[in-house]
Length: 68
Image (cartoon, rainbow, N blue to C red; front, side, top):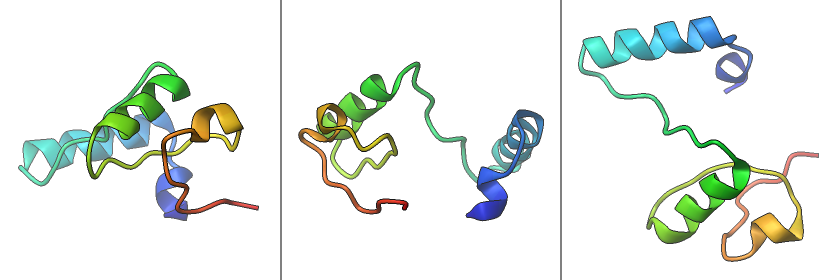
């Protein structure tokens, strides 16, 4: 997990370009805001995402992990 989070944009793009080309997956969906992402999580069964810990963004979603 730490290796993935430490990637810069170019490495992230290159990784998913190769994965898509060889038929081994597609990149995670991108959203223009945390609010848009959390709305997708709220209405899509099985979807997961990450965001801040504010009460506004937690409404209607279950928190699985909270980083210290």
